[in-house]
Structures are given as structure tokens and as C-alpha cells.
Amino acid sequence: MKAIWNNTILAESDATVVIENNHYFPHSSLFKDYFKKSETQSTCPWKGVASYYTIEVDGKQNKDAAWFYPEVSENAITIKNHVAFWKGIDIQP
Image (cartoon, rainbow, N blue to C red; front, side, top):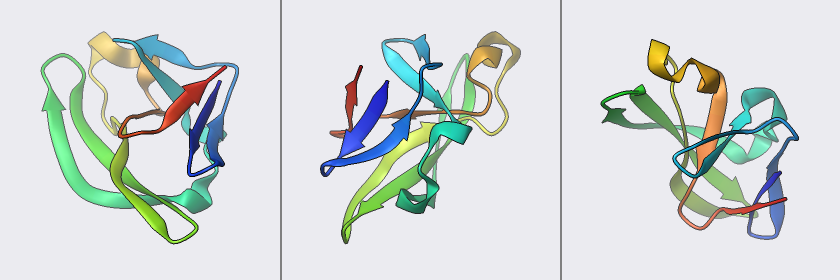
């Protein structure tokens, strides 16, 4: 699977985990130069507190377009050290 934005591959993996129709990519599959830690957080009742990345490619930013759970709950242990995308990030096989 590939996560693509602004004609650029952000992450690529054959080992994504699908939860609630979102592909979670292993942190190791990210092209980290495009990711900037955000201060934004949100809470999921069963996964825990999510943190976000802003994506930056060729001077364009997509604020909080990727999220992950630094401390994942026991219910969602399969997405520990994984990142998911939204806000126009295209997920392709």
C-alpha cells in the first residue's frame, strides 16, 4: 500500500493494518522528511489519545493529515507504532 499526496509517496508498506477502513502504516515505512510533529491531539474511546503530523511536500502543507497513538490501548495493540492518513491523502495498492 502507498500513501500519496501532492504526487509524492509519503509511506509504502505491504504490512498495513486496517481498522475502521483506515490503513495504518508502520512508522518504519514513512518517508520521514515529509512529516512534522503537530501539537494537535484527539481522543478515541477505545484506541486512546492520538497525536498528529502535518505533511509538507514541495512547500505545501496538509495540517494534521496523519495520526498515530503514542500510547495505544490494549484494545488497539495491533496499531502500535503505526500511522494512518486522511485529509486528501490517497491510499493506493
